[in-house]
Length: 141
Image (tube, rainbow, N blue to C red):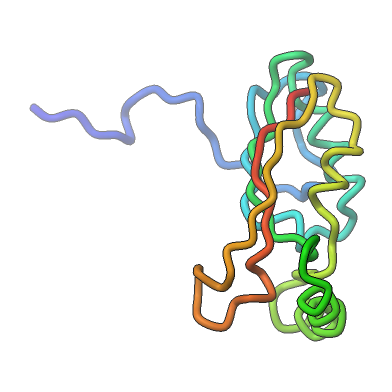
């Protein structure tokens, strides 16, 4: 007899919600993974505040990889700023001009933020230079 994954016990569950008002108790979550998400939330500061609220103190982790406004290429940053209003319409609210790395760093994660900035130079998709500047790292509650 073979076992089915649907009959196995798991602590994972799918819950619907929005980042600005997470449906979890305070200090209840071990980790949050955010990948190319914070560009599209309605209120980034509120979303980060909610992440901090639900993460367990001192041990809860936010693992992130997000595209950001270029920090080292003024021409690309200008292009991102010009294209951002169009991008929000055609890409489900995605903002090209957010300083997500700085916002994470300034969001009050008491355990600190380890972060790297890297410009992928359009290596994800051809013509994707506008989303090639990224930050990745770990923030601890």
